[in-house]
Structure formats: C-alpha cells, structure tokens
Image (tube, rainbow, N blue to C red; front, side):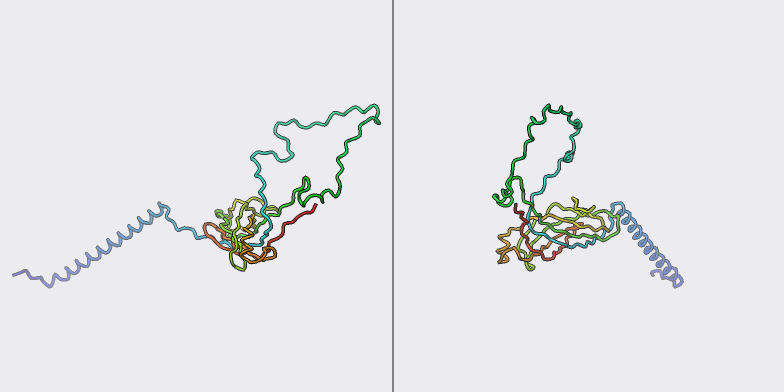
Length: 259
C-alpha cells in the first residue's frame, strides 16, 4: 500500500510551500531592482540625458524698404591701415623748409587758377553722368526684432533667415535673397554673427535683393510702383523655423539727384 500522509504533517508542508514562494518573489524583486540600477548607471555613463526643451522665440518684421539693390563695399583687408593713417615705418612728415623771399615781389609768377567751370555745365549731362559724380544708391532692406525667451547667461543659439517671399494680397509673386545681417548696437547697425542668447532681444537688419519685376507685374496685372506688397520670411532659431509676415509697403522710386 502506498504510504499515507499524516494530517499532522500538512501544516508543515503548507508552511514550506509559502516560504519557498516568498523567497522566489523576493529574489525576483531584488533582481529587478539590481537591473534597474545597472540600466540607470549605464545611461548616466553614456550621457543619455533628457534633451533640453526647444527655445521659444518672438520674431516680428518692423519695416521693409524696397528700392534698389546696391553693390556691397569691398571687405577691408586684414591689417590694412585706416584711411589717412601713415604706413608702418614711414618717416613722419616734416614741415617744408622756408623759402627765400623773391628779390622783387612784383616779378613773382601768379598762382595757377583752377579751370573755370560753367555753372550750368552739369545740365549738359544726363542725371548722374556729370564728371566725378555718382548717384547715391538706396539699398533695399528689412528690419526685424528678435527676442528669445529663457534665463540670461545660457548658451547662444543660431539664428538664420531661410527664405523671403514677396506677396501681393497674400499670394506669392516673387522671391528675394537676404544677405549681410547686422544688429543695432551703440547707436548704429554693426555686422552680426546671427547668434543670440536666451533672455536677449535685438533689432536686426538684412539687405534684400530685388525680385524679377517684370514677372511680378505680370502676376499682379499692373505696375509695381504704387502697389502694396508684403514679405513672408522663414526664420530658423536653434533649428526651429518660424514664419512671419511684414506690414504692407510699396516699391519706391530710386532717389535721383539732378545735377
């Protein structure tokens, strides 16, 4: 006959089973905790941290001037002396030696007079073609205000104009190129590296090229002079692109000085 299980041994058997289950669950929890600690340490060593939140920028176009596209002045060569400054190693200028007075002042040759210029001679040339005269050029440009939210002292973020579109009544009729960014500082616009720190605000200016005015006039069905336009600008701040629209502005006639 098979051995019979005494009733008195049942409590001991149940207690053993419960203890074994508790030990297994405790070992599983300990293993999970150890695994979590190992993963946390590995992430810390690998530098797997939460990426910083994207910066928030406030951008607006304050004004646009559309007249001409002027040649940029040549960049100064490094180390070039300023205009009027003596070159390094050049002897300092000295006052000329006094000359002996003429024996007979009446025999002195009169000083050469500049050639006489007829006051109306400039009218003989087309405007801007008079000798030695160059018409001024009024550069097209746009002014923006840019403000980046955040605590001051944080790392500067890059700013870039990605696209400029010419609009008529909300419809694109042309494209413009922007260049030569500058920022208002010390009472004037100065070259800007397109870097701005959180917590700062500045006034920026960009030179603008001109659209194909023939194509623009075909698109709007009338002369571009006297027509009101807007521009739509894509500005990228720290990898995030925001689009802003300017107030209305006209195409202006170039300022011509009649000589």
